[in-house]
Length: 179
Image (cartoon, rainbow, N blue to C red; front, side, top):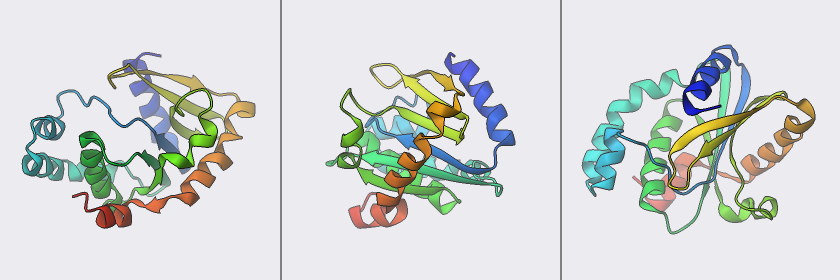
């Protein structure tokens, strides 16, 4: 499905979701379009990027409803790309607003990367997984929706294991002096 179809489908599924929702992010750069904080970061204005990110904070809480445990796994390569440094600062804000995020080094997913980098994933339940798609420069292009429990369900313990290996995002960001 294209990006518009995915956005609408995701919104419907998110509205009715409960329990654990998994998100795995592997890429070290995404193109965030005309998002003001992102553009300020690209311009090298870190202070402005963080001021603009702070303005986004009220929306972060609504992204984490009480009936859901949103668990993000952010894979990082060091040294950080400017994008990852910026995103980690935003993800720390999201964690302060209820998101349950962990950071794992790229080495944690190497066993799963024999055929290339692990994909960007969002897993809602044992019968619903999205492989989120991007072009070569990181522009979101859509998603592949997978509803076969025989394929999706085995992904849950893998994501849980990677998550358990991770470090709390806020602790990681403080240790690495991200913000």
